[in-house]
Length: 90
View 1: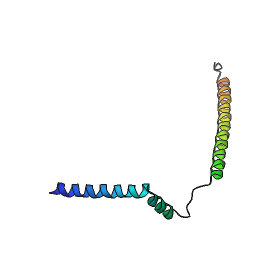
View 2: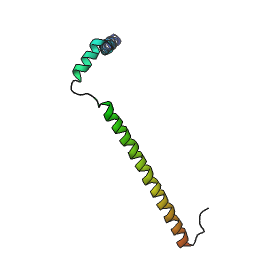
View 3: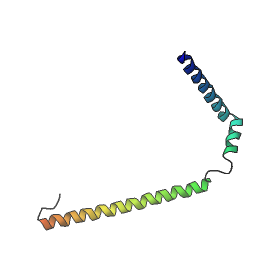
View 4: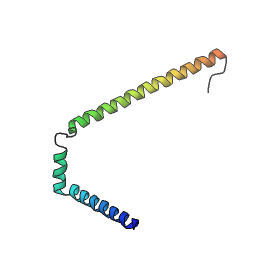
């Protein structure tokens, strides 16, 4: 008996999912989506280009800082080895 109830709940969920998919996939569904998201448009293509170029610049800056830190670490390592009396690294 309980299994019939579960099957009924499953079928109702299946039907609701199918109906939602059909609404969102059709022109009416697109109109509904545009009404629901009215006034909340995404960024314009020019803004996306600005964001992308800014991200690339940030990545380039991070690479430069990373390289500067590597050089500083290598120099510190060299000085410490020299102070302790160890031979230079190969």
